[in-house]
Image (cartoon, rainbow, N blue to C red):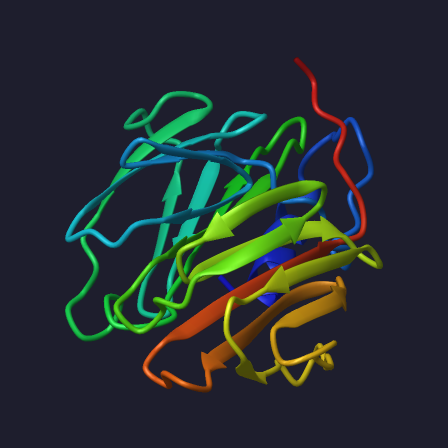
Length: 224
């Protein structure tokens, strides 16, 4: 779902709720929905291997009076009607052939609570045949290897890094201009919001890497 729609939903729910913390619909909050897709787990963001079918399980910090699941092709919206538990949802996702299964088509998740306003968001991205260039990723204190699709979520203004074994050329999101330190390493500052960058190996142009960054401004206080 686009940020405009998320903010509209947030405004509508804030208008009829007594929330325990003030939420700014114009502010980007850390994505922190608990996500499990085909057995792979993530906190707010997750990249999963390509599959013909995905069992997506999410757990929200608050009750899910309304949920949204949005891709490049579809938007599923549900209101509380007894078909899922207070905080958990299971969704079987079969990508539409030719639309959702052959390139960048992540799934944006939203969970909205009417009474206490404990809203939450998440992002799932999927490996695909076009993104097979591996990279070494430093993101928010973690160091790991990525197969070809990466999500890095961190506080706006923090410095991150992605490194490739062989020289690459890069195409940066116009909203978040960057410059390669050299043709193998990008050291970048997280920008506010959602940005997508692409890297192509020079010696093997068929190998591409997709990097999505999410720069958040604030963290929501959660009740346990």
